[in-house]
Amino acid sequence: MTVSRAEQRAATRRALLTEGRRQFAADGYHHVVLAEVARAAGVTKGAAYHHFDSKAGLFRAVVSEVQQELGERVAAAAERHVDLWEQFRAGCRAFLSAGTDPAVRQILLLDAPTVLGWDEWRAMDEEASARHLADALTALASAGIIADQPVEPLTRLLSGAMNEAALWIAQGGNAEAAEQALDRLLTGLRPTT
Image (cartoon, rainbow, N blue to C red):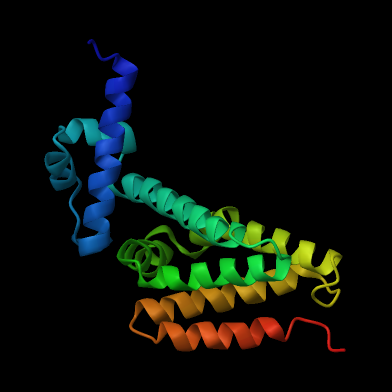
C-alpha cells in the first residue's frame, strides 16, 4: 500500500502535535526544545519547522487542540442531561475539573497566557469556550431559568471566575470546594420566587 504525500504530511504533523503536547504538558513550554520534539516524533527538525515555523507555532497548535478537546469534554458532560439548568451546571463542572488534567493545567492554564500573551490567549479562549458559555446563558435567560439580564458581562464574569478557579485547582486547590462554590454562585443566577 502506497502512502500519499498528503497522508505522509498529515502523519508527520500529527506525530509532532502528539509529541509536542506530551512534552509541553510534562516539562512546560520553556523547557521544551523543538529539535527534541522532532527527534522523539521520529521526524527531522526541518519537518518540524516546515509544519510549524517555530516552537511557538507548535505550541499555538497544541493549545488550540487542547482547547478544542476541552470544549468537547464540556459539551459531552452537558449533553448527558436534558434539563437546560443541569446541562449548564454539568458543563461548568466539567470545565472546572479540567484543572486536574496535566495537559490542561500546564498548557492552557499556566503556559498559554504568558507564552501567547494575554490578548491572543483570551481570543483563543473566547473562540473555544466563552462563546459557548454565552450561548448557554442566552438559552437559560430565554427560558426564564435565570434572571433576564445582559449576557455579555455575565459571560465575562463567569468565564473569568471559572478560569481562575480552574487555575487554582491546577495549582493544588481543592476541586470539591471549588465545585461547591461554583454551585452556590450559579444558584444565585436563578430568579428568587
